[in-house]
Length: 256
Image (cartoon, rainbow, N blue to C red; front, side, top):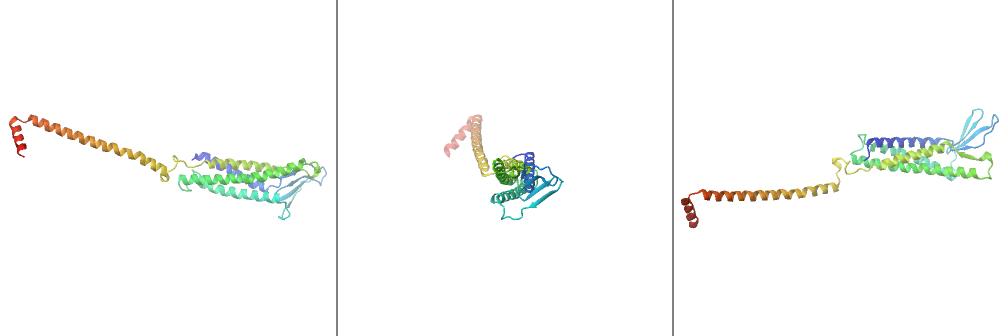
């Protein structure tokens, strides 16, 4: 598994990504008008977002109109709304899993369970980054293609707003945090004593098996040595006995 400091860094990046995606979803300046008027009550800039269209007048008045009717919206805008909402939900769920998978926390189970939880959190962050990146890319493509067409007047041309920049940055943060968490695969060296794999147990058994054979060999060699020593002692004792005793011994052996 990765170190606790790297996991905390990944958690901070993912948290920034979640906050950025949530703010970008609510911001109204996904595209901003190019032209500006100089009169007092004419709008300086017009902004359009996923949920509202806003106008900022030269007198300082800022007014917005909500897009309440869902059926009147184009399908592309509905898909972008759904993508951003799903991105925020999946990223929030990934934060909950990441808080359980951090090594610096006490909850979440063993080291191996924490590793699997961190990997699941990383998958959620990567999926959230894709759900955030696709709507932003499609919206940017629509704005740029509409701007480059010569048939439209300048008053109806828009350019990408600041919300799109926030969306791309948030997607990058989510992707970076997700990749770091996905690298938190629990290895055999970092796992605890309660999570020893079957392969490790088989290796331990194989290592322990040949240790039994040398012991048996040592026992046999010790027995052989003791037998040899006994035989030598008997030979020496026989040599030390007097001749009469030897004859008596031989006669006894013959009699037996």
